[in-house]
Image: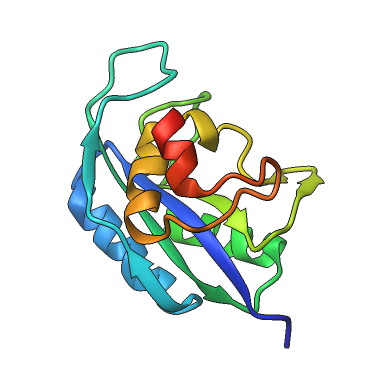
Length: 153
C-alpha cells in the first residue's frame, strides 16, 4: 500500500447534462479518494478555446489517496471515459474533464503526467472552487497557498 497523499482534482463539463456528469464524477471519486471535500459547482465561461462553446460547470475535489500519481490519473481517465469523453482536438467541448492539479508536495514531469498542473495558477475556474475547500494547500512549485494564488489570478 502506498503512502497517503492529498490530491486536488479539477472537474469540468460543458456538454450534455453538466450537473449529472459532475455528480457522477464526484460519486466515482469517492471510491478512490478518502475524506473527499467537494466545492460548490461554478458556472464559467470557456477559456482558451478557438470556437464558441457552451458554458462550463466547474468544481474541485480534494481527498486522500494511496494511489500513485500515474494510477490516480488513469483512474480519472477511466471516469471520463465512462461519460464518453471525446478528444477530437485540444480544448474541445467535453462531457467531463478531470485534471490532477496537485499531488501532495510532488513535482512530476513525465510523458502524459505533469503535476502540479502546468496552467492551474492562471485559471480562476480551478482556483475559485479549490480555494473554497482547500485554501491552505500549497503549490510545491511556487510555495504559494491556493488562497494567495486565487487573489493574484
